Length: 76
Image 1 (cartoon, one colour):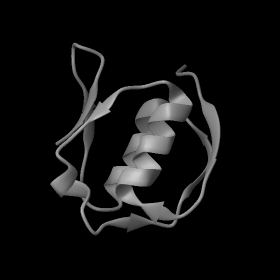
Image 2 (cartoon, helix red, strand yellow):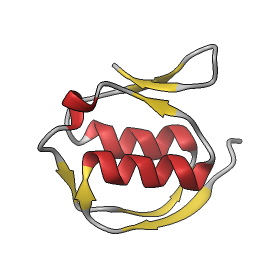
Image 3 (cartoon, rainbow, N blue to C red):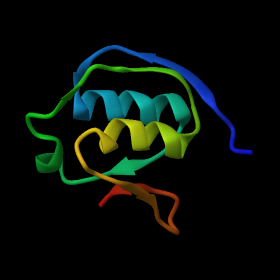
Image 4 (cartoon, rainbow, N blue to C red):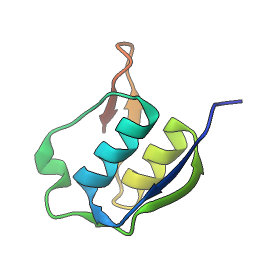
């Protein structure tokens, strides 16, 4: 079972919500900032694993996140 973390991140830009989630979970996220430009989210609230949280954040806009061998998560 994957570890989960409780988050209560307010609505904001995709970049802001994803940065807050990454900081809360202690993960590294890298992506081209143009991908997130002008995209927003209603926030993220509840208990999530790293993968499920990123799926909730980016999936709303048809984006996916994969973890590379380096440990970084990248938007695809």
